[in-house]
Length: 240
Image (cartoon, rainbow, N blue to C red):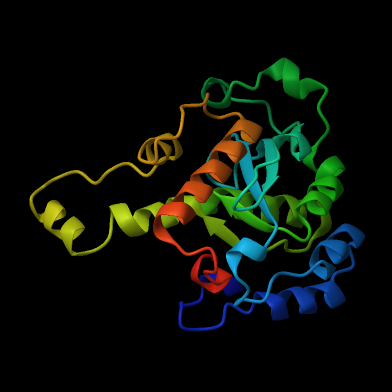
């Protein structure tokens, strides 16, 4: 269990984890990443630099599938800065499958001359360092980056993150009213990125481009915060 998956009443332990890893890792890029640290768990969210992150992959299992593109957009609760973001296409270790191409629309020709993930991991970690990561569905970004770093350097890359899908599930799939709806056979509302954005009046974007989806995630988190949270909410109530 990583620190952020502990029960809410316990300290996530991310600060201690980062401090320990900064002294233990032998990979310079990881050392700098961990040395940048993470916020104190009681620090208010409005005071923290955020980085929306999205990965497009060849499948859902980091043990069998690989990253094909990475998008990042820095933001805070007031401003999103796509021009300061990043986008990489990377060459996976195995040829793309046709169903993968249909999903993320990255083609064989695009990855043919793209760098392997190992060649850009230093840039990726440097861009993430010092930011609290925001994703939509945490079972992709953290596991796939961890697997990529483990494959390249034999070390873990774990970090706290905010999951906008999990936040949306708090309101749309939990609570007494939702339990009654399930008993009545009513289907739960979708908490996919586009459907979640629609509930806040946010515009439709073309899906499955990593940088566009990162920007869409940043906008969704801003909307969630405006509707459901105080801006001085401590990060311990939001991160995993």
